[in-house]
Length: 221
Image (cartoon, rainbow, N blue to C red):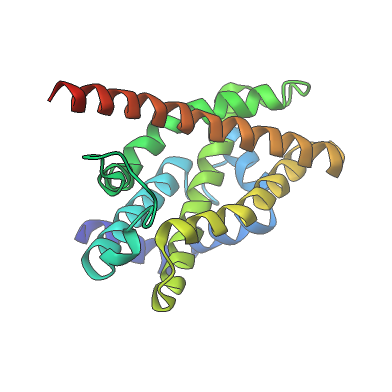
């Protein structure tokens, strides 16, 4: 952890300030950041794997802060009727705690979905869509970290806050795709919505599988 923060501070305070430049340009010029990496020009920006590593570390730090100082904000489904012996908060704690692993597994799937949605254009292949999704996902995880921190003093439930944050995430993805492709805004937004819908179906299917396995295990015991 100490070595990570030393690296973070070194990157952030360096003369060329690659981390800050990467963070800003993923807002204003995401196409430049992504195309630079895809085309092999990798000295200007933080590389995609390091950026993902930073976001995963912040996700872990976020969960630690919530669990240590704001455990009440991690309560999920209070007031909802649950099957006897079933604790939805235990399931959500598991998902939140292993979110970094789930992210690493999910990104290749989301990359395939992204390529499928934009299959009409041959500009980027599957591997390059992996770069697109990794950069944009990592960027939004970093933004979410700071946005969640802002909501803590107001006592907003973590899961409710995450749902609210997902709304601007949709517009951010549309902005990135519009920068990368020469489609109209209407076409870009429709394709982005399709991407989001398909991306939501994937974790729902995974959650369903986990739910079935959990139920089978519970019934056996």
